[in-house]
Image 1: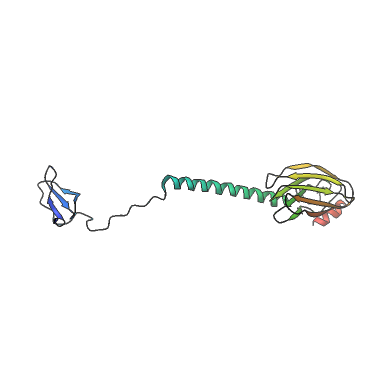
Image 2: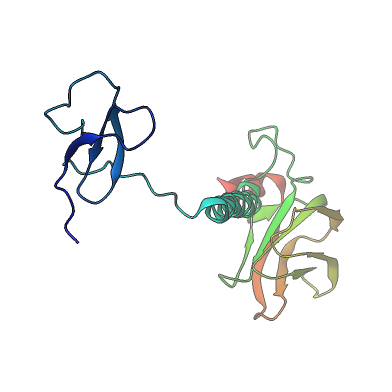
Length: 207
């Protein structure tokens, strides 16, 4: 069967007029009755049809993107919390000037199970009562402080990467070297030393 070439032909629809035939089927391009047949193809004829942007996955992709954003925000908040606990608490609390009371200087102990380290915020304090903060990183930790005679004067624990909570005050009476033991669950025990000395010497140690 031979088809007519593309062009304007009498509109087969009721009402008359002219309609464009693209060589295979009637198009939506038409002219009202009473007008003469156009001599040019309809606007855009023979030009590539504009492409329609593809939707990337629709509703499923949107939900996936939202979940990814929520997870990213959650991970970022957890990392920020860990960094705050592991590093900002490494700074001694209070003013370390001449008025610093080394007999009440807070102790902050980071039990880092990932780096296998037991780190204190200060290397020396004066005898007295000290608030103790234990920060576990990577794995739950139990911390022991032993006096020069080997007696346990403090035992405190902290869950891994959780919000740090202050432990009861520890009384450091004897001068000398105290042993701090960090026991991270499933990890090797790490230790650190804390010197209890006069306030003047404690200030010099920390300078």
